[in-house]
Image 1 (spheres, helix red, strand yellow):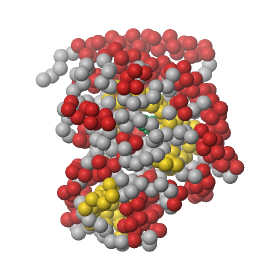
Image 2: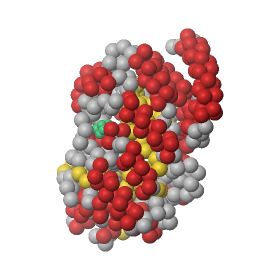
Image 3: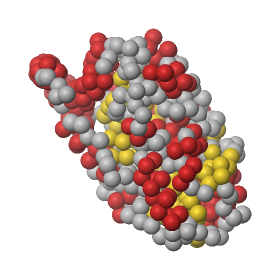
Image 4: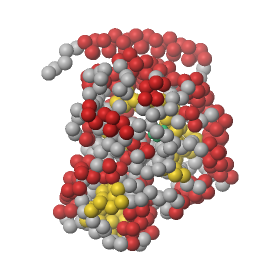
Length: 465
Ligand code: SF4
């Protein structure tokens, strides 16, 4: 069977899919000078290939099938499997229609097809509900199915073949290239050491497709070793939603990387309460150079209302400071517009973000994603009917305390205040000198006063109707 795997490139803004927002994806359509630069840099460093398609390619190739990959070019095949997203689903269904017109059977995979099949049902021959691998294993042994097919979660993740990156990298922009900062151009190699998340944040899509499972350390190290054999000094992006959930496993993995003499660098996403300075030191010695984590809101009560366990601010500061000392890049995520938020609480969260001083910060507007408990809660308040605008940067429901304009304004202000300040540059350049840092703090205060004046002027400007 000739199978075409499609991870379609979008034509608008910067779109990331696969493991981003649990697979619903995100689209950054620049709305300010800062976000224009960010979209450009994300395109260069964050446009990584799909790990789920790399697994799919490995399973089908192992079954003796001819596997090809596309980011949009149409080609003859017996079956095309399309990775779905919420933010770009119209592009995906239009492409599927064209392929079916050529006589190719089309199937959809991913969380969006699983949770919102009505968006895809008229554009395909079949779709998989759940993590795709179990259904792909069946596809490798039988002809293409029809209709909606349940794909059960695979509990023994060690039983899966390793992802075939050679089969899912089509264009040169996605080949890992020059290392300019921490991530190389083209991203690196995503790796799933575990799947799902055992936490209960009600807004999070990472925990709604399948349960939490982890691979054995030996199996993860085997995959790392294979990457090292094929690509000198690879940069590995652990895409587990909660990488350091089990401290002992992390330590074991560090030992295994060192025992095997693997030369690699890696990054991961985690919670700060799942880290301590001793663990960070061991991770660093194994090649850990960057991490992302959710802070979400300054207010513990707001977090608790959304099922998220708050992390003491003192612990957050200790971990970030230790990372700064070691030269580990930190990226903090913030969510603006929780139901309890108002102008003042969001302003306080933005101030906290700049004060915490992670290397990078990502601010998004609270978005109720289908299938999450938060979606059920906010469904009566939804105002947005275009699912592609559930992109993380667009207000989608009637907020009790803030208008859409206010939310968008605060989002823009968050990016400007975080990135347009001297201490951001100092953190980025890893400047530690005390005298310089004190001078930078004084400059920060002056720049903040200027931002405040500009924000007042901006927000007072009449809005065109
Ligand atoms: S900790 Fe919360 S936000 Fe992070 S992946 Fe788990 S459920 Fe999602």
